[in-house]
Each structure stands twice: as structure tokens, then as C-alpha cells.
Amino acid sequence: MKYMLLIHSGAVDEQGGAPQCTVEDWMAYDKDVREAGILVSGESLADLVTATTVRVSPAGERTVTDGPFAETRELLGGFLVIDVPDLDAALDWAARCPGARDGGSVVVRPVADFGGPGDSGDPQSPGASGGSRGSGDFGG
Image 1 (spheres, rainbow, N blue to C red):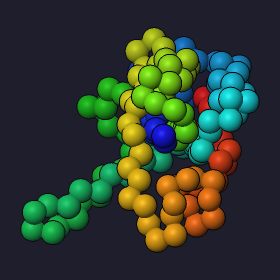
Image 2: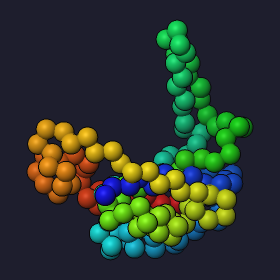
Image 3: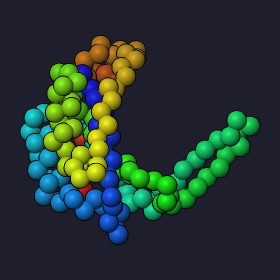
Image 4: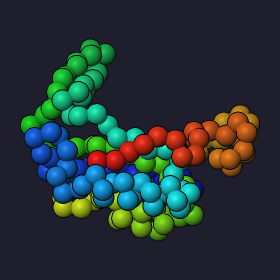
């Protein structure tokens, strides 16, 4: 079953990164996930100062806000989609993630499978939705 791991950092340093996680921590985790053969996709997000938020009012009016926000306590830094047997396995991988340390968190959510046309539900079958295995990079 596919699960998305939403990686939120706690405190951030001057460069917008999580100071408690080293590049080596992320490289080791990336290697472990890849070697386990569970990585479907994953990406790091660009620095927070590149963020843009869009909100639409009930009247349909669009508001766009730039940049970092003082009220933000946890910052979404990246995500992984993993394919593991069950929630317990997904939680184990989330607990191993460097982003879960020292005030950070990893939110684990099952990926909805709506079974589109030609999709047998098997992520390896031709026509299956869900992207290619092992694509993308993530890290600190």
C-alpha cells in the first residue's frame, strides 16, 4: 500500500533548513529507503522564501501572499511516497526519517487509489497510476 510521508521541520536556521539534520543523515535515510525498494517518489521543497500561498474567498476572489510567515511553526520541507505492506511499516519508516527529530514531524497518510481506466491497482502494471518507482530525490 502506498503512503505519503509529509516531512515537516521544527525550528529552522538562517538558511531555512533544519539544523538538527545533517546532509549525511538524509543521505543515509535516502540510501536505506532506496535499498529497501519502497521508494515510489520523493522531493525536497525549495527554500521557504520562494513560497506563495493562494486563497480564494467564498465570493471567488483570489488572494496571493508571498514569502515566509511569522505564524508558521512547522514548515513542509519535502515528501516521500513509499510502497509498504501496511501502516505499521509506514510508521516505522517515518520514525527513521531525520525530519522527525528534534521538533520536526512526519505526517503519514495513505494515498487514495481511485483505480482509473486500465489501472489494475498494481503499481507495476502498464497503465497504473502513481508514478515511477525510485524517481525523485529528497533530503536536507
